[in-house]
Picture (cartoon, rainbow, N blue to C red):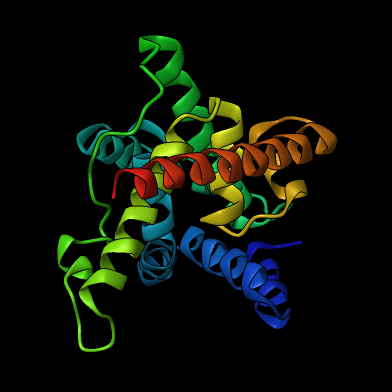
Length: 208
């Protein structure tokens, strides 16, 4: 099937994933606006993925840019056999693994705000009393801390599930593991988070 026919077929299909595939195929034909659409659509989630994984804004930015660089280099050989997001995050995952193998960083978050979590968002508003806002902020910080304590494989599976909305099957494709192993990682991560947040919140309550 010609590239033009593959683009037409992808455009005729319905669904977000098919739209991504069609955009990628259009980019292969030289349509830069198609790439820009993909970039704008996925840049936030991909950047947050790296920030939450490595906890260093500069390193996250480097890995983020490297990922898009590899997308551009691999465009000519792209085949829509899997969802574009699965393909994109597999590239991101492989870059992250390469980094871990090279420097073996300590597996903790830095105390940073992500691009959609600015400090101003925690200021009191007309809708929320200061006390309510403070409790919400405290719980968010406890959750972030508890996520940082998870084993790397559990943390990645949880973030891909929570941030990207991936199913266990898609996550298994991204990280290259079995479906059952992925389900176990998500289950254990959720259990650990529930226990950790509960215990940390009790400590906060006891100090008030």
